[in-house]
Image 1 (cartoon, each protein chain N blue to C red):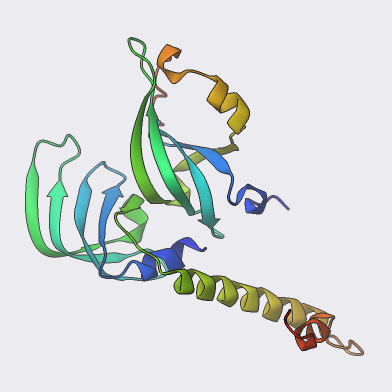
Image 2: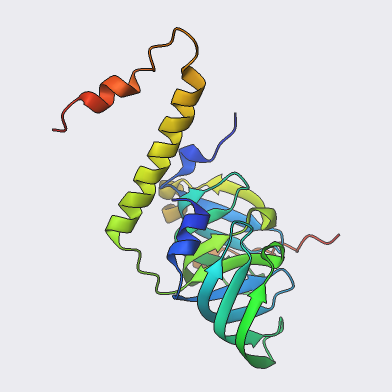
Length: 95
Length: 119
């Protein structure tokens, strides 16, 4: 059975259906994959400047908007300098 | 911590609710239910492009339209966090003993565990 239980209290990356990337500590979840993330920040990617991190705080994200949840390896994440990253933002899902 | 327990703990706290169409509603949570339907009071509504604003005395938001809720300055007292965790543990325990207590079962090891004194 797949479960998010193993990600509790770990740093995770959420990618939402509108293309936003949010990193934070997974504080809780439920049957519908509604997610509570604490200390979360939005990572804004762009081609002409480095990654901008916007602090958001405590967030509750509805499960139906989540496209992806992944665990972050803190050692690798901290080794990367976000100001050097140039990337195209993820486009939102359109139906 | 379950998302819905957090939301109900945030009653009367300021929060920002974002809808799937990008509109945001900034106000104090009055009430919520298991579908995440929400009522807010003293609301500032912002259009998706952020250039128009409305002030609403009170509003009701259907849960299915919500993307996310940013709970600002939510101070969850530690005791509340503990009681939510205990509640979850009790629920787990109850469902486990309901499954395990067939005919001839001795009720599972949890009863024995509970009888042990706390160190």
